[in-house]
Amino acid sequence: MSKTQYKQPDYYQIDELLTDEHKLIRDSVRDWVDRSVKPIIDESCHEHKFHKHWSRELGEIGAFGPYIPEKYGGFGLDQISYGLIMQELERGDSAVRSAASVQSSLVMYPIYKFGSEAQRLKYLPKLASGEHIGAFGLTEPNHGSDPGRMITRFEDKGDHYLLNGAKMWITNASISDINIVWAKDEQGIVRGLIVEKDFEGFHAHETLKKWSLRASVTGELIFDNVKVPKENILPGVKGLRGPLKCLNSARYGIAWGVVGAACDCYDTALRYSLERKQFGKPLAAFQLTQKKLSEMLTEITKAQLLVWRLGTLRNDDRATPSQISMAKRNNVDMALKIARSSRQILGAMGITGDFPMMRHAMNLESVITYEGTHDIHLLITGYDITGISAF
Ligand code: TGC
Ligand code: FAD
Image 1 (cartoon, protein in one colour):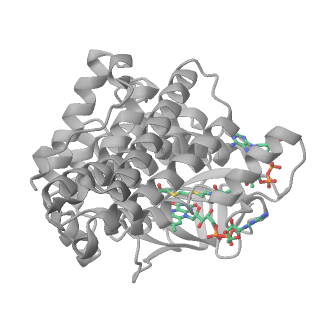
Image 2 (cartoon, rainbow, N blue to C red; image 1 turned 45 degrees about the vertical axis):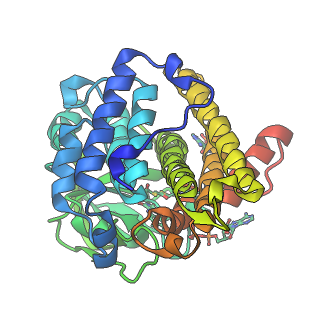
C-alpha cells in the first residue's frame, strides 16, 4: 500500500469548519511528512535517531512557533492551524510532533510570554528557523507528577546566579542549544532560567534503550554550579503556574497530534481489510472487523470534534486548563486503543515496520505518560468538578 493513498477520515465533514488557509497549511505539512518522514521513519526508529535536517525543515514549514508573532520569526497563525500542524506531524511519528511541541510550546512560548524583549529578540528567531534547538527541564529524577517539590535550586551570587540540580526525561536534552530550566530561588519560588549549552558546569546525556519515541532524543540535564547570567532569568512569571501555563499549550497540541496517529492507523487498517482475504472473503466483510472499524471511526470523530471546539475556545482565550486536560487524556487514550485494535486487523503483518501501528502504539505509551499522566489528568478533571484536590 502506498503512502499517497492516505485518506483522512472526516465522517462529520469537519473540513467545512476549516478556512482555506487552514487546509493549505494542513496539506503542506502533510506533503512534508509524506516526503521527509514516512520514507525514513522506520529506519530512524531502528537506529534510535532524530534526523538533524528535520529541525531546519520543520522551521521552513512553519512548525516551530506557528502562533508566535512574525516579528520574532514565528508565523502569527491561530490555534486551529497549530493543532492541524501537530495532527499532520504525529501522523508521521510522535517524535516529530514532540520536536515541534517542545520547541513551540515549551521553549518559544515561555520566552515569548514571560521573557524580556531582549530575550525574545535574541532567542526566538533562531528557534523559529530551526537553527537552534530548545529543551524544557521540569521533571526531576525524584519529582515527575509533583513538579512543585523540585529540588533544583539557584542562589543569587551578586553578578550571576549559581544553579545546581538535575532534570530527567528531557526531550532534546543532548541536542539542545538552549534549555528552559525551572528551578527554585532562595525563597523556594519556582523561576525559569535560560541555560545555554556552553555554560560551564552544564552537562547533558542521552537516555538510550527506549522502546518508545525512538526517533526522539530524551535525556538528562545536569547543573553542577552553573553560572547563569542575571539577564537569563525569565522576568515575567513566578511560581509553578509558569511551567504549567507552557504545558497547557503543549497538551493542547498533543490532543490534536494524536488524532493524526489514530487516523494513520485507522486508514491503514481499513485499506488492508478491504484487500486481504481469508475464508474467501475480504477481512472487511467480517462483522468483527466492521465492529473494530466502526468503533475506531466513532472515537476518531469524537476526538476531532473535541479538539476543533477546544481550538475555537483557545482562539478566544477561553479554554481552561481542565478542558485541555480532558482533551489530552481522552485523545491519547483513544489513539492508543486504535493503534492496538488496528494492529490486530493486520494480524502478523501488523507487528512489522512495513506498517505504522506498532510504532504508533509504542510511541503513544510515552505520550500517555508525558505532559501529565493519564491518571493525573483524570484527577485534574476531578478537582475541577468537585473543588477537592485528590493528588
Ligand atoms: P497546584 O498547587 O494545584 O498549582 C500550583 C499553581 O499553578 C497553578 N496551576 C496552573 N496554572 C496554569 N495552568 C495550569 N494547568 C495549572 N495548574 C495549576 C495553580 O493555580 C497554582 O497557582 P498559584 O498562583 O495559586 O500558585 O500544584 P500541585 O503541586 O498540587 O500540582 C498540580 C498538578 C498535579 C496538576 C501539576 O503539577 C501537574 O500537572 N503535574 C503533571 C506534571 C507534568 O505534566 N509534567 C510535564 C513535564 S514536561 C513534559 O512532559 C514534556 S514532554 C514533551 C514532548 O516531548 O512532547
Ligand atoms: P510518577 O510521577 O512517578 O508517576 C508514576 C505513576 O504514579 C503514574 O502512573 C502516575 O499517574 C501515578 N501517580 C503519581 N501521582 C499520583 C497521584 N497523586 N494519584 C494517583 N496516581 C499518581 N519532562 C520534562 O520536564 N521535559 C520534557 O521534555 C520531557 N520529555 C519526556 C519525554 C519522554 C519520552 C518521557 C517518557 C517523559 C518526558 N518527560 C519530560 C517527563 C514526563 O513529564 C514525566 O514522565 C511525567 O510527568 C510523569 O512523571 P514520572 O515519570 O516521574 O512518574
